[in-house]
Image 1 (cartoon, rainbow, N blue to C red):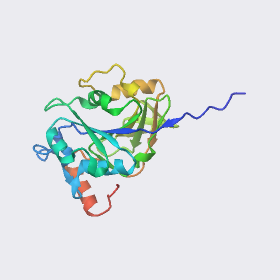
Image 2: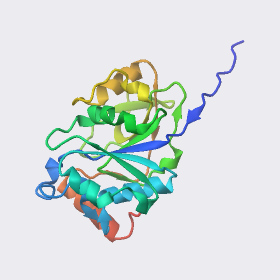
Image 3: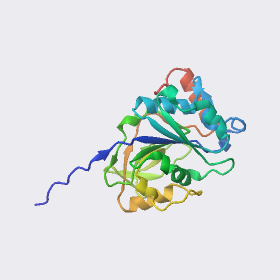
Image 4: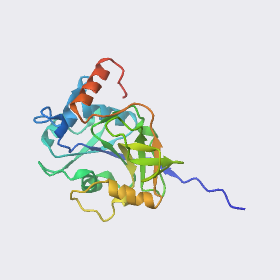
Length: 240
């Protein structure tokens, strides 16, 4: 008789990285003189909503990478003490954004030795970050959402809590994930995407996931930015 499979220990991420180095091309001219994370919505910068959520979820250490107009981000947010956070910055330099994979790789020394949460700086969601965990032995845990109109084909599939590169139905990666530093073993701080690392880990069965059915928006275009502003002005979008 086979023995029941033991549940693997789950580890809570102790630090978080907010990806804020994007140029925001689809939001020009708004981003010509203001970095996308500092665009105002609901009376505060977009990134401030994220910082409030992280503080409410019990996080204390936050790393923010930046490139385009990054000095403005540091000046606006400071050391994070107003949110009860300690903010560290990973500067990538004007015009030299390292893409998602390279940006995380460069910031690894600031993120500690355990699992860490990574959030795209241009997503807005009512997801509770406090519930995100990474099972011992896994390399990543991804939050997936229903496919939005601008991404109808999705990215991955989810079966019994495991994320696969192939299969149906398709879901969209939310830009929110928990990662083990081992996922980036051997990487160099140069431009490279995150997706190939995730797909390789999926082939080894080392990526778990969950489906978030609540509110989620990729604030990547002027139209979606206006949608979020209206939602917050109507008082229906406070997710902190």
